[in-house]
Length: 601
View 1 (cartoon, rainbow, N blue to C red):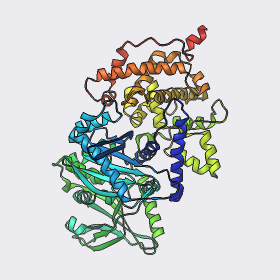
View 2: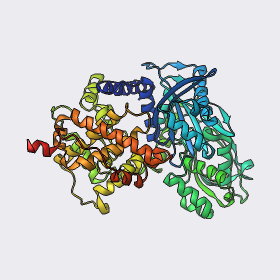
View 3: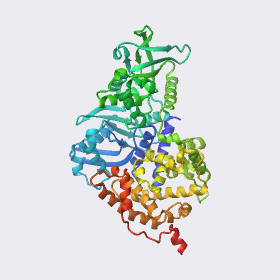
View 4: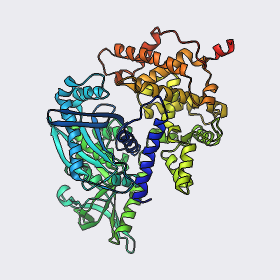
């Protein structure tokens, strides 16, 4: 796929999302900028560049300054923050964006952050605004933040993608541009490397001993070595993301399972790091060999060095040493595979780098949910979705068992633009279900809203354990009837989400999860899920009941949080127990979905 095709596919996705939401009469059509933000940040989260993104639009003037925000993401332990500001043009041709425009947008977003940190924005902002909880969180959590990034997102092509970092109250704020070309490069898992010269003789006290394999007539030479942990820490401190530009993942958090393991090994068993760690994969344009101290071949320096796999390891070493000053990196060695490219033509070379990056990263840590992609339950759900038509006999739901398979399906099956439109009409983005979203929707119906509030990746293992107890491979798989009832539960959640979204300024996701769990708790055994499948929607009466209880849920969340962040309180089992002990208003018994009412009639 070429860049122009990728751009047009992205615009089709944005317009498809806009059209699907516009079709919902009860939902206000969102700004195209926010849909673009959602599409891009969702992709960034999928490839491990950011956390679970939240879309949040804010624009205001304070004095002579403009403040701007399109979305954000915060790590679970509140130590890393990403802010997004989008410049969306809607163009169908590759168009350049001036540096002045991206610089200005980055500055406006950084100014938003600065006003949050100072406390000025919280004092001036209406508490009903969507951004109020974020502003409150930033002011409270800023001292503990270790990494802060501002991303300018654009569907145009930027000349400059990184700007000089800013300092706000003693913390470094990184400013980056995610333009359409960089997004395309990430999608391909291969990006151009920077011209960096790394001198191991200086950084390590001498050339790195290695096993050197000459490629002779091949496209590259090859070396195996071990790099001191302190050298990698120094390189990350000196070059930051520049040395990781060809890596498909940016550093996320030390609460990430893999990174937490790296951190703990560094602190507790640094001498075993080499035995435990998979190491790094490096590409370079040139290498200079000298004799190492033991007389073996040694790598004195590398030019054009890029870490294409192992960025998480490199960054974890840096952040662990930064956070825990007592960590002894002198005992740490990291295995390294170094590929030194032989100059051919630039196109072939870039293609080889892309392939090295793709295949190296295909063996690295994946999301926990991806480990379940080939479980019989997941395979069965995919099969049921592809073979079970909605009552209209034309449309279907799409179950995305493997990340990105919806897009792959469109690319594979569509022979023309008309074919693509036909496929998207029969399986629109609004009916695409990722396995983590599906788990989140059903966990809410199974009355686990605290798990849902943790996010899809956290809810997914609990959902799978429920569906396949004791990790059994012989558990009964869902049939068509069960599949339809599960989709009905999805429809209830998505309908509640749509109704609740415009009603509350903040914590909509938590209110939705708890309201759906409450509907299940109070009415679940009486609601006719088959009727919901037949209509592919809920009745207006059920919608009204959802809103009545949503108001009550919202009020109780506010009251029971007792000054705590509601989004954090909602993640605790205690929160749901408070809900179970509460006396709720009596439901409207004229709701058509209530089986008992229908039978009595």
